[in-house]
Length: 634
Image (cartoon, rainbow, N blue to C red; front, top):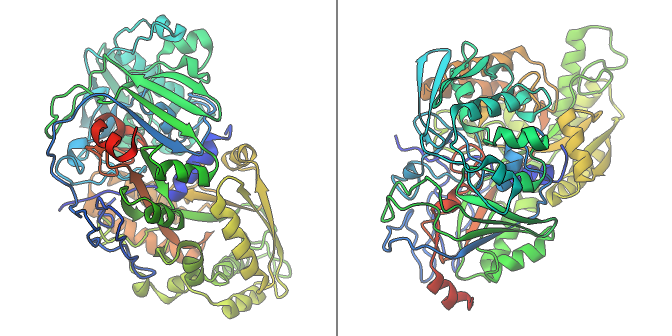
């Protein structure tokens, strides 16, 4: 069956952006290249986006237009972001945080298969970051191939003849000397990231961390995995670790400074001006070639340079996109996208499901209404747990989700946002439509303030209680959401204190779990199999849930990693179990938009070709410089 994958979007990349300033699958709604002279009408609330778009005036709506020109070399691509990078070291920040600044220089062993995307068979959309990958939709990058000789062993065969890039003007690069990339480099990086308890990926991988990683010869790496976690360990070791040369770490201590950046990728990092820009230039000795289309066999990349403009102000970033000063930009919310479409007649875009946001409530703090230990109740754990559940459900019932969908997203999204969003593509047979959910689950996405008040009274809080929620200041949606929900909760007696934080302080708080009560964060909608938000001990488990049933679902899904049909059954059961537990406060999920200029060719809106490969498509794109000059004057 044809599968089109869409993963993490608006929320998770917003979190990515804010964490980058801290120290700290599926058939998607059909995504077409559209010229928005006649934008697509949004689908009704609580329904997935339309599978087709109305033709735009003067344009077409083919899912993937056939190539008519052979790719040409030269030119520059510029994109905008609100993120100022602080370092280039995955021991300090997570791989998904650093993917924008490291993705073009430091490669993984694996990546998503570009030939299975819109440029080739169109089996996958490669629209965003996430973890819904498998051996069937991945190809070797620094690893030429891999094998599973048994259920606890992975063998990576390292690509021969790949060299670290050589920049004669960079001391770290001269130190490495353009030598060949080998299995020893893999072992160094895998152990450095996955065996260090201070790294985010150490916590994320958890029980799926490799037991051992050894180089059996110059081009072969053997990974020993925990039993039952072969697939998850393959994903973490193969797709989540950017390779960096060990001699640079030995001399300079780490890779925090941009000047220490040395990689094997299609670009070489040349300059970084804090709060201004990052510049990469083409690696003339890059080994990669175009796998498909009229440019099949061409050495990559096509462009001469890549530039990231750091634009914290949204209006300025939008103006840069509208006027063609930036060539591509990703993860726009419906309201902001509407402005871009209405003022940019030539711009192209794709529309797809965004990621969900979560309002976490710590379950491990005694005395909190949502975690048990309720006053005036006998010391009976079962009674305390039952009352805590009533409080969590009440907090959800008090939120007017249908109204929020209209207020925040103009109806472009769905009230059903957790855990499986209403994407009936690859989640066909997994996703349960809102109207088919049991009443106790369905009502959580509606609005029932009277019942919320009743449950609070039954739980021992007839007059409500006080609570505090933390959130970062650089995600505008969070300020809106907290203000709206504060108003809803006031009506049922809950006195909510809003605690906006500097992104750096927030990032340190959430990753170390130092908040006392509630905190906001974003998650991918397209990786429910990894159970990040509910797995005991996981960094992303910000409600600090300890539910053996949810943990068991994770273990079962990990064991069924490559058996998609079996995993779908498990995910559906998990979803139906998790929703009524109300471990988080839910609010609607929105659609997301990626925009690009018409002079970018061999591009279809892809924003992640594999796990957290947020700029991996860049090396395949070429710039029609004549068209750019005719449309922009530049």
